[in-house]
Length: 361
Ligand code: AMP
Image (cartoon, protein in one colour):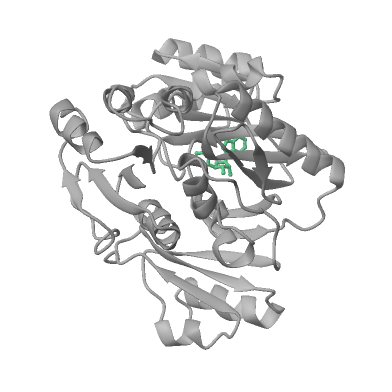
C-alpha cells in the first residue's frame, strides 16, 4: 500500500522503517523540511492549510495517517475527502484541547484530575481557588513535553502564571500526588480487534520522557485490566484504527488519566526491540487493514531518550544489550535525537547508559 504520513519527524521515520519490510511505500507531508525521513520516501513541504497541496498528496496515497496530534482538523478532513485517514480525525479534535479531552474521558467513566477551564486572568484566579492548590495550569492547546504549563502553589501565583503562559485559554488541574507515571499503548484494527501492550513505567526529566520500562514492574493483574479497559473504552468510542497511547498516574493503587495521544508514542519505543510486534508495525498493520501482531513482550526492555546532545556512539554500542536508534537530527538543547533500548539489562548496564545519556561519560 502507498501510505501517507502527515509529519516527517522521528515517529514518521520509525513508522516507515517498520512498514517498508511489510511491502508498503511511504510519502510524507510536513510544514518544514526535516531530515528524519530522508531516504524513506518523498516529502511534500507545504503549510498544513494548503488544501490544494494536501489534496494532491492524498491522491498519491491509499491511506493517510499522522505522527503528531496538532495536525489541523481541516487538513485531516480535506484528506479524508480523498482517502481514508486513520486514526479518525475526531481523535485529533478530542486530543488537541485539554478541556475537551478531559470531558471526553470523563464521559466514558475514566477518572481524571479535578479540572476547570480558565479563559481570563480572573477566571484563572477563581479556578485556582475552586480546584485548590497546589494545582497545575496548562495551555488548552499546543502544549508538549511539559511546555506551556506551570505549577501554582497559591492563588497569588495566578497573575504571574497568566502572563508567563501568554494570556491564552488554560486548564487548571488539581495536582495529583502520584506514586508513578504509567502509560498504556493499545492498537485497534479496522475489524475492531484490540491488542494492548504491557503497561510502560515512565520517568520524566525537565518535562521530557527520560526512561520508559516495558513491562512496568509490579503491576497487578487488576491494575493492568483497568488500564486496558480505559484504552478499550476510548478506542471503541472513537471507532479508532491504529495505535493510541494514554498517559496515566498511579495513585493509591488506582489510575487517573492524564492525557491521550492519537498516535505512536515515545513511551512505546521499547516495543521495537522488546516486543513481538512493535507499536510502529502494529500501527501500520492496523491502518493497512491487516491482522494485528502480538503485543506480548519478548524480554524486559528499558528505553532511554537521547536529548540535546549525542553520547559517544561507540560507548553506547559497547553495552552489549543496547539497541541504538538515531533519528538523523542535529543536536539542539531539549531536542529528542534518538533513543537507546536495553534488553534485559543488569544494574551496571543501566548505570552505564544513564551516565552516557546524561553526558557524564
Ligand atoms: P503533560 O504535558 O500533561 O503530559 O504533563 C507533563 C508532566 O507534568 C506529566 O508527565 C507529569 O509528570 C506532570 N503533571 C501533569 N499534570 C499533572 C497533574 N495534574 N498532577 C501532577 N503532575 C502532573
